[in-house]
Image 1 (cartoon, one colour):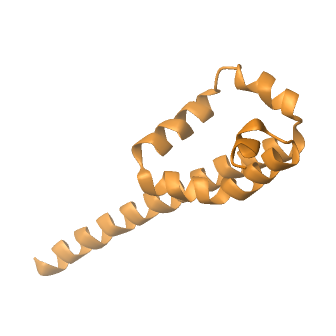
Image 2 (cartoon, one colour; image 1 turned 120 degrees about the vertical axis):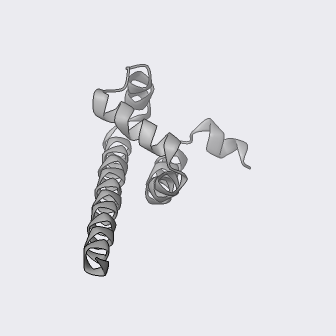
Length: 99
């Protein structure tokens, strides 16, 4: 009986570990997409894209980031420097307001 309990616990741990790994992959993919978008687009293009409704994948990613603080931190940590550098290079008003 102890062996079957150990097997069940091991299987549960593996399922959870797989879900956590998949979630990390989703966060990385979403962050990479945001970084590429900011690096490739001009300020005017970004403004125009802001008014577009999010895709189904983007909605899923946003829900994940709202519901999981650790995923949100990982996402923000990854995109913060590239996005803020782009804002700085484009003389974004929010960056200039920090002065």
